[in-house]
Every structure is written in structure tokens, then in C-alpha cells.
Image (cartoon, rainbow, N blue to C red):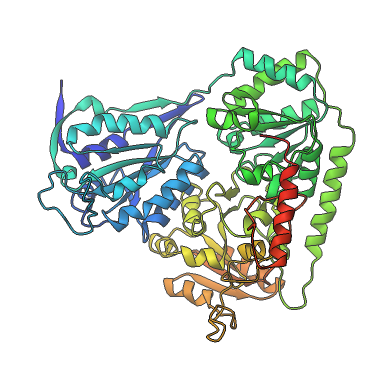
Length: 620
């Protein structure tokens, strides 16, 4: 057997650089490079290997481990999981900073390869700087904190272990059903140890992503179920996007006269103005989608995790005859809500199901309900387009203006606060891959690094991070990375003086305003109820080297957008919006656990309202 002597770190980079995937006969190089921050746990070992192979394997220097990991995830999401960047961090706090990012990747079913540094395998210098010590178990280190949020976790304590670990890592990263965060913990001494690796380990390896077919039995069962239903309703989830089944879904809906709604990841698969597209479903849903779903006798959930925001905490479906049919490559998701399930690739399953339904000449019983629901919602959209506030800009009106101002192929990125709800209801994507929402974890601070990752994926497009002031303060330092690298993206910062989404949730359940607005502390009341504590976000961005604008009117907003398109460096547009000017829910319910005992009459009333809503849940 021919061998080559390399350090473990060198072997890791050489292996990653030779990995490819094949989908529908098309090959893609899987690992584009690595992002991260060097520290004493990785700069000498992995850092040396990255420097050695820098001509063929790129490295991006981050400013915060969590943020750069989110940039890598956004890149993978925008590339529909066909390409990734690996992420490295030093031991101790550097590796601990990856935990939130790993959770974000796993919840969102996004392939993410994390390479945190670890304690010395030899234990000779122990305890080293930043090392955690557990007096009852000396094998424990900071990297163990990544186990619960990883789909695969391994620690490479001998250089030859890398061979099986890498193969297992690729198994998970390329599995449409089980993908998520993969963690390979790298002890800093082992990174530098050499081994005679088989040359065959580094040969080009192509991982075939096979479309899991739908079993005949499950298709037959689905046809029997659908044939008994008059008004089915489809939920278009992220699985439709990753399966590249958008056109298949559109044809299916048209052929059988079935309306559909969208999850956050499913939004944009089909153009917003398609006659069967009723928009977002559930807590972030439109009036059209939620009303049709409420009366439907069959929910066909395709490629969705069916979380509480999609199902309105399981209260969205009120027809006494309602059943659920799921199509999902992931068995866990396919078997939710006591559903009849087709565990298969979305495109393959829809194609097969369509042929079977054609044989029985199935057609839903909808007449003009779909059109009426859409027309009613468009009237509501027109209202948001006409809102005029005397004291400033409303968030919804700003979004409606941005719908007009941004290029149709521009990518918008968001994740948290009130913006995702407003965007799922009001944003109008007509081109695929232009609506990028991280809403599995709804991770504050994803937005700005997410825009960096999306821009890396689509350098030819304008990319915009839609972010609230609260989320911006949680994470925005990759704005400086964009300046450093010359990777231009734009930030539209909605400044409403605090965590207003949660502020609304708090007050809607009878609790007085407390701890959610950015105010000065009132020393007499001993709380944050003083005057607003303003921040000049434009100056903050300018300090990094970005172009910045502050706008307080629609005309200033339009001027800033047009000017930002001409810039070659990253921009920030600071938009002052009035608190509480987001959309409200449309016939949805969110179970958040209102206190059963309280001194407040309003809280008690909110608890009783919650109890009444829970009585109306029809599904398991």
C-alpha cells in the first residue's frame, strides 16, 4: 500500500479538499474552504496545514467564532447544501462559542463541519491555558458541550483515527435526512503528529446523493386517504427547496386544484403571485393561508419539521375530519402529528403521487375559495402599502417600500425578532434563492454574518441583512470581515429601541412592560423605564469602514437604497421605525405558557384565554 507521511492536520485538509458530491448526475466540490479564528489550540497545527495548502483551500478569518460559523451555514443554505465551509476554533472559549452555531445548523438541517481545538491528548502539559477540568472525569473538555447539538461527534486522539472519523463525518454531512452539525474535536498535540496515511485516502471521492424513492405501499395509502378528502391544503417546507421540487410542487397544485402555504424555508420556492400560493402559514402566516388551512380536511406537509410556528401550536387545523399526510426524507419529521407518512425525497414522492392520483382522476372540491382568500389578503397588503404614521416610519410600510426598491434577484437575510413574521407575510419573492430566513433556531445575531455567507454564495447579487437593533447588537463584527475581504453586502437596520417583538408578546399576555426596551435605568423605580438610550448605528458601521446612511423618511430610504447599489463596499442603512408597528397575527395561536397564578388580573385573564385555546386543538 502506497503511503504519504503527513501531520494529522495536513491530512485533514488534503482529505477535505478532495471531497465531491453528485446530485442528479451533476458533480460539486463539497468543501470550499475553511473559516475561523486561530488561537493557541489550532494556529500551530491546523494553521500550518492551512497555510501549506492555501493556494487550493481558502481560509477566511472571522472576528467571532459563532458569527463566522453562521456565515458558513448561510453559505451552505444558499447553495442548497451542495457546498460548505468548515469552521475552526481554538480551545476553551473559542470552541464554546461554536455551541450556538452548532445548534442552529442541526435544527435547520444544514451541513456544518466544526473543527474545535481540544486539550492535549498526552495530558503532559495539563492543565493548559483555557482548559476545563472535571474532577470526576478527566476526559471531559469544552468540546463535549457540542455533543448534544451535533449529529456526529468525534475526538481524534491518534492521527490514524482521522481516517474513519472523516468518512463518518462525510456520511452525515451528505445525508439529506440526517445532516446537521458535525464536530471533530482536534487535540492540539495530535494536530501536529505525523502518520503514514494511505495515498488512496486522498483520492477524489464522490458521494452520491440519492433521491430516496417512495415505497409503493405508502403511495397507495396516500392515494386512498386523499381520495376521501375534498379540501386538502399543502404546506411547502424547506425540503421542497433542498429537493429542488419547486416546479414539481407547482404542477401538482395546479393539476389537482390544491392551494399551498409556505414555511420560512419553503417561502420563495414558487413565486408569491402564483394563484395557488396563499403565503406563510401558522403564527407568521397570512389571513388567506390560515383561513384555508383552518377549514381543510387534509394537511399535506412536504419537507417541514411542523414546529409550533407552522402549526400554530397545533391549533391551525379546526376541521373535525382533518388528517395529516407528510412527505419527508427524515423519518422523525415524517411521523409527527400522528400522520400518514411517505418517507421519501420530496420531488420523487410528489412525482409518483401525482401519477397515482391521475389514474383515479382526483380533483379537489374547491371552487372560488382560493381566489377569494387571495383577493382578501391582497387588500390587506394594499393597506400596509398605504400606512402613513405622523410620528415616524412604520416597520410594515418600510418593508413594502423595500419590496419595490430592491432588485428582484437581490437576496434578503433575516432570522429574529418581529421581522421574520412581517417578512413571511409581506415579502414578495419572485425568484428562487432570494428569501433567506434562519427560523429553525431564530438565532439573534445570525443576520449580519448570514449576509456575508450569502454573498460568498452569490457574489453577483446584492445581498441585504434585514436586522433589528437588538439582533445587530448581538452579532455584527463580520461586517468588518466584509470590509477586510472586499465582499460587499448591505445591512438594513430596523431601529425600534429594543426587543419589541418580545415586548409585544409580554404585553399581549397581561404582563407590564419590563426589561425589553433599550432605556436608561430609573434609579427610583429600580428598572429600565427611563428615557430611550439611543445609538448611532451609522457611526458604528462607519468606524469599520462601511458606508452608512440614517433615514427617517421614505424618500431618504429610497435615496439610500439607490446610493447603496452604487457602492463597492458594504453599507448600513439605519432606519428609525416606530415601536409596535409590525403585523399582528392572523387567526393563529402561540402556546407560550402563561402563568397560572399571578397578582395581575390581566395575567389571569390571559391564562384563561390560553386554556380555552388549548381545548380546540384537534391533532396529537
